[in-house]
Length: 71
Image 1: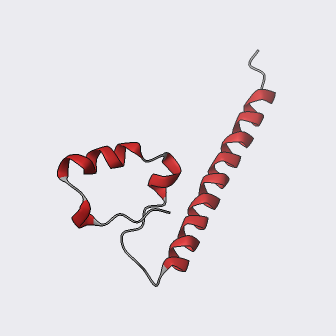
Image 2: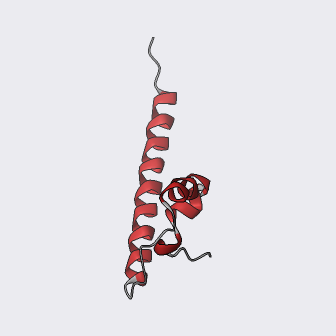
């Protein structure tokens, strides 16, 4: 992973750099070093579990709607 030093950036380059980042790279930006990286990872795992649960609930609702007959 590349390390970006703020003092090396010029105002015109900063916007281009952020535009060139992909979705995964943009999501993994961490401002500075942190001793609490493990907590951040646990938080992200909980977020992904929540998203998966919401998606599963939506799929169940769609399945139930597919069996309903409106006659």
